Length: 262
Image (cartoon, rainbow, N blue to C red; front, side, top):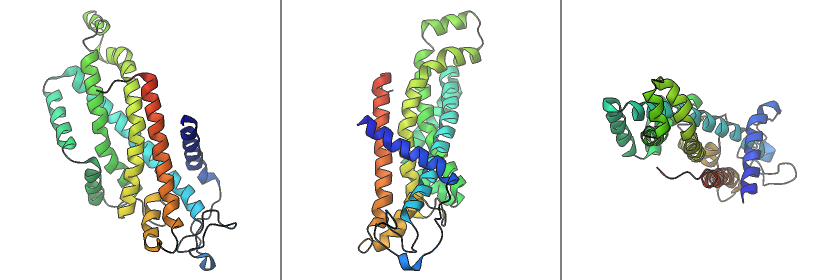
């Protein structure tokens, strides 16, 4: 199963990274191929404007990959820094962070992202901002809990007793020990971001036409479900396979690193 997951993720990564280097025409309208079923000319068929679904699926992979990597990277950096600072220094800073986390956790993250995206407006950058503004909470919560446990370890206490600066202790003695759970958290966060980006695009507040996105392709194909189901099945299956593969890989990473739930 892990080989299947790695294969799917490899195709997703290669397609997302290399699609810009390949001259794929995803915008030209072909009236004679409108709603054409999969065949020799188009392996996944054509959409309501005669455009190749395979080409648009590849371009959508680039969008989902860019958004997922950007959101998880920003969330990981910001959330980890905030969580480490709160767990290490404690006091008012820690209480404020816990209060903010409780507020964010009281609402479904996707609904908050939808609300933020609606306020910021549609577009790739705004979608990244909206999703990152919600995604940092999980990393902050996890890193805070890990630091609270690690700062009582003997080697950390010894470094503090020797007068080692807090920054050096955190970078050399604490951060390496919390990387494993953060990597696992990031893997599951990737799957959530792929679904969230598709949801925003499906609702019309994410990636805008003519730039393809998997969620937007599903929205466009909903009107033709009875006559051209391949318009929905292709992007839907792509989302399903990518998210499933990420979750499989995340489970394997968690088992391999023996990360206990915080």
